[in-house]
Image (cartoon, rainbow, N blue to C red; front, top):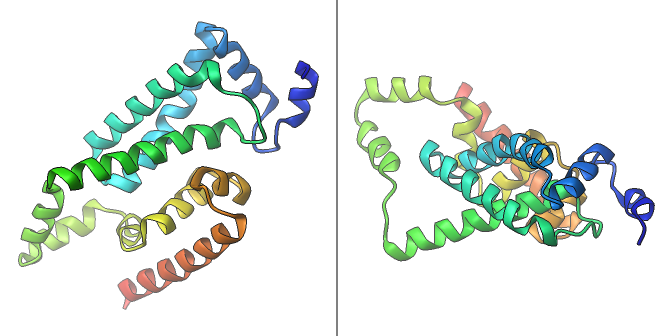
Length: 194
C-alpha cells in the first residue's frame, strides 16, 4: 500500500501529523521518538495511576510500556487501529500482568493497609479525604473494566471504537460498560454528598 493509501486510512482520532511522526520514529528518527515519548508517557502514567493508585508503580508501568512501545515500533502497522489504541493496549496488558504477578506472589498493597488502619481514626479519614479527589475515590469502587472505560473515554478522549480495540470488546459492550460505570459514579458521588 502506498503512503497516500495509508494516510487515507488514518482515523479521525489519529492526526496525520501523529502518523507521520510514527513513520519517522519507525526509522529511528530521534526527534520523532522523543515526540512520541513525550506525548504518550504522561498519558500512560495517568492511565496506570488510575488503575494502581500508586505513584511508583505507575511510573514503573509507564516506563515499561514506553520501552515496549519503542521496541515494538518497527513492527507497528496501521490496520485500522489508531496508534494510541495500540499504546494503551500494551499498557492494559502490562497492568493485567502486574496484577497477576502480585496476586501469585501474595503481595499486599501497603497503601491499602495504611488506609484500613486509618479507618478507626477520624483525623486520618479527614486527611485521606483531603488527599484524594472525590472522583478518584469513586473510581476505586468501579470494576476494573468500568474504570478502564471511564479513563479511556473521559480522560484520554478515545472514541468507543478505539476503546473496544484496546479492551478487546465490542462497541456495544463498551457502551454498556460506560453506561453502568456512569450510573455507579453518579450513585457514589451523590451518596458522598449526603
